Image (cartoon, rainbow, N blue to C red; front, side, top):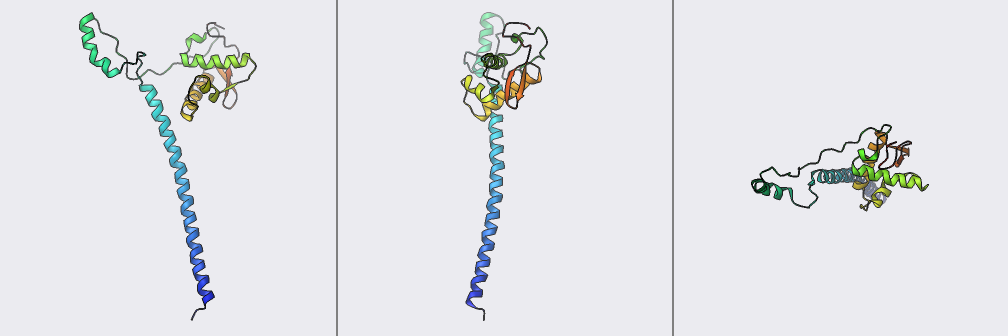
Length: 183
């Protein structure tokens, strides 16, 4: 007959194994949770970007579907085809910087980024971060907005309009002139 101490040791060993199994399962679940949260955030950013791209180009706030319904009536009254807002905006074009090219060649969002970076450089405040850009533009400082600005700032760097002296910090490139001036 087994001793009481022996039985207790067997049960303790079984409980210890169960605890180890549960800890391994908890670690696995925690790792899956981290991956799922990252994926969820990526999809949220993607949904936000698609929403921005598919937003109506019409600044009057009129629903594009309503504009489509009223288009035939407007055409009959005026005798010409009205301009209907497109469902998707064309991709912004950022030209490669060259001597004499003014900021006006850039889309407005890119001009705003350069303006803030140039103002900070002029005041001796150093390069600007994308979080600071978001705050300056009155945006929510959330990952989706910050990453959208980072993408635009990186495009300015790739096209020669700005430089990134340190990771995530941007300033206008040497020789890039102000908003209305050519260089």
